[in-house]
Image 1: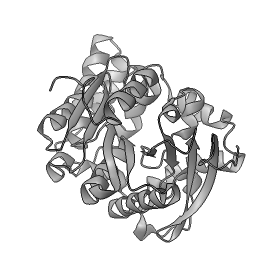
Image 2: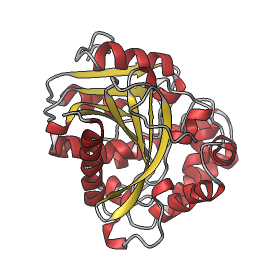
Image 3: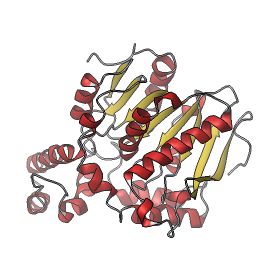
Image 4: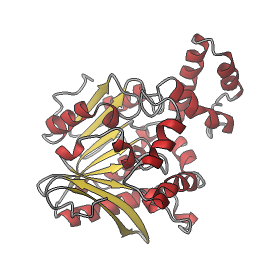
Length: 332
């Protein structure tokens, strides 16, 4: 991977930065010094996404210098000696703000943009609500609101679809893994959730029907990582699952916790997304108080519009987000 300075004409630059007590990895990708800076917050917890750009080029560097930050314990930031007491939602929010401040200093800009995906939207929305002065605008992709309610909605959808498909084996497995009225989710459901979603094309992307062939094997073929970094991608995913971050997210009603933002907010959501509820995200956009709110339905996407429909995503970013408008947004 090139080590050219991202403040130059172009290039992709991998580096580690000391943030809140530990070294954390970033990949800076940009086409020129005049580009505004966009911080991308990946999902998971613990699943960086830069390597997906090999199969799903986003084209976002046509409008931004993009900072792909690997969060505490994940990917380029994996370190098994990270203190367990720091693997908390509060720490992740603090890290997000520290990385945002570092980017402001690095690129000499007062404000940056944030695009937060899935779990990233859970910590990103809280970070922007806490320190709006750091940001031009917030962009949520697969925006989390009340994830436990989303999981119950997804479970009902999966059960209905597999009954329609007369897949008796999957129906039996889902029925045995029924979700209760309170978190956490049953282990049996968590083991079944991703395979069941991907088989129906309602998981990570519409065309990704297996975690093995859609995520694991492509990550091993990604030329931008060394072999130790490829190994750490999955070690970090497992490491991040040990600290209750997922259960904390499930127990939080983020829509109630963040009813207002002081910056414009934009939401990109695939209509086929059942990883995070499309309907709940749209309802949140309707009730959110912010200087400007735009909600964008992506008809050919599941959970990852920026990867699945990159041209439309870029059009939204350039024509609405960068201009502070909502001309392309759905009618709310």
